[in-house]
Length: 170
Image 1 (cartoon, rainbow, N blue to C red):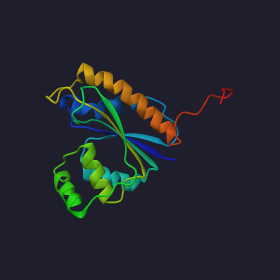
Image 2 (cartoon, rainbow, N blue to C red):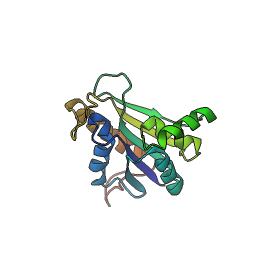
Image 3 (spheres, rainbow, N blue to C red):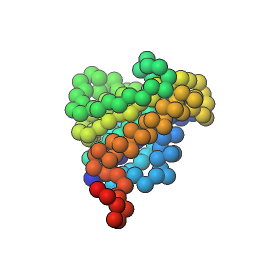
Image 4 (spheres, rainbow, N blue to C red):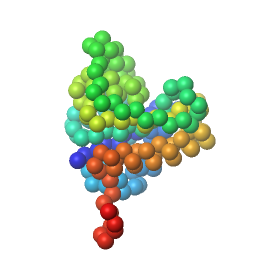
């Protein structure tokens, strides 16, 4: 089983850059065989093309996303079957060809191109700051820790993850 963990973010735009930071932290971990961790800062069309290339069994997206919750709030959304109308898909591609990237845009473009794995989950952290910055706010930093724990859980739930040490219990 191949699971792709993708950090979606707007580079150095405060808490909207959370996906890049998540990828930096996860890249140093042993998430198990078949787990690929990549930064998806480069545009929704290119991300959809990467999904078509890899054809992962599962996709876990992590990002800072403004949804109107309290700063630092972590949410998990399961995508399941995602249908995109022709008009919505065309609008998404118009937005995406400029290099614009958000979780919702990645999902719309990838679904429209039928590149989205059936097992797709988005883990989102509500931003406190969207101002240009190389650092996350304290609220987003706290949310990131919770989000990373959820990513690890998702990876294990999708059948990937670290193998137990020999002689370890079940």
